Image 1 (cartoon, rainbow, N blue to C red):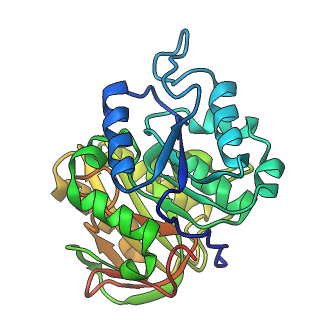
Image 2 (image 1 turned 90 degrees about the vertical axis):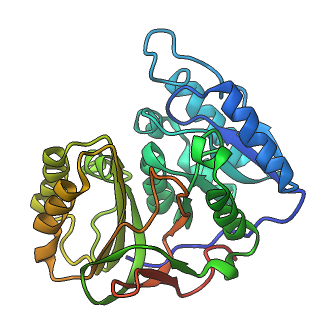
Length: 307
């Protein structure tokens, strides 16, 4: 794992594009999210296909080709300083191969934000463009629209990233200790699904793995982690930060699985770090060198997430 290129921070008046990479976008929540962004003195632009619905597959926001075209068009627009995903769901991996990543690379660095299913694109931005990205709230997400902590942490990361170099959480040590490495990760199911694809990280060696998930029963979390273990993808990981496990069953059962599958790796593991599918979710930069301290439940970045 090597540090990635940090995009420029945002300034008041910056144009930000909103894209739908995955599932259908609720229009009312999208409008509420746009109002939040306008309140930050940003200029949000909604790409043409954000409110589309796939003709036969109701879990997709329009066709794969149109979603990919919106992402590429937004990224390659020199007037756009950041691209924010409207929601997660499912579908990002279906459109990732339709993006012209060479054209995206030529467009230069800018900010990319999203979480959940957007994990597939975070990996592509890391492996194809070599860019730091932000695992943070989506523009039409309930948490982004309604939760002040979520809004404030993302806003600080975008405009004044030096003020959030230490991400302090209410978590606790599942395995004590400190570790250094480059942050990577996302939602567990997406990382497992990406194994063997052209855009996946080659492995977590030397990295600080930040993972979470939603609506996965404990035995399925076991299966996903076991897949990462058996594939060798977790070999050499430096430390692990665990986010939320909303609607995954009683947390005691989830915790038992996490301890069983990850406790034997011999690296620090922090639980309940407050990112992912939870109320008041924090924004976690991916691709930045940092220190994970399990005893204080903090992630301290060596440098601000954005330049």
